[in-house]
Length: 121
Image 1: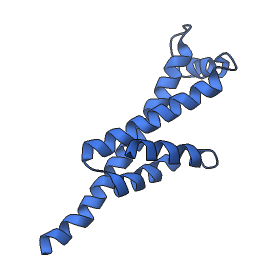
Image 2: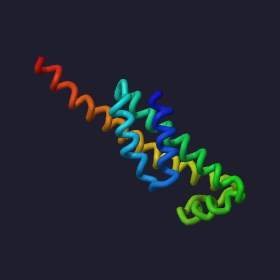
Image 3: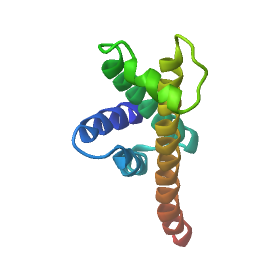
């Protein structure tokens, strides 16, 4: 469930806001629905990875991967016919790591707020 929440809200908000909106959204979603630390991290990681790779493919396929190949050349990637795939992988991993760690932080933040209340009872 957390995977789909992060995927949908990040998709909708990224239509109008900058790329880094994924971080507070993943934080808030994991704060609200995270069950375990691993669940929170991997849900945020895979949701944004799938979102960014799918979005990259959506924009890259119609133009024959011209822009992705040029970005790959600027990054110094080896010139191959699948240079665009490496660019999509790098961008997907970048967003996925940001969202995964923010999801983890959201889960731990909720734990930090909840555990002191239980200890006082």
